[in-house]
Length: 68
Image (cartoon, rainbow, N blue to C red; front, side, top):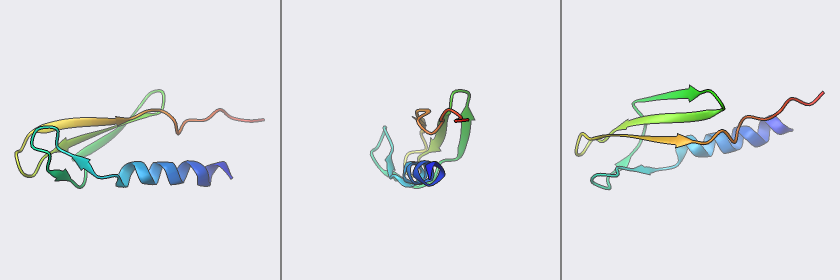
């Protein structure tokens, strides 16, 4: 049950449109992504219109405690 719940949030986070903070153009996919300790996910972007680099992060809301 929990896996489905977290997968849905993760999918929405990857598919949400992101705008360039420099020229406001839509960016479709990050150049790279990384998983950071604590559950944070960072996306690194390069705008196709202006060429500027930027980063976004998703807090560690997907990390949950184990239940025994």
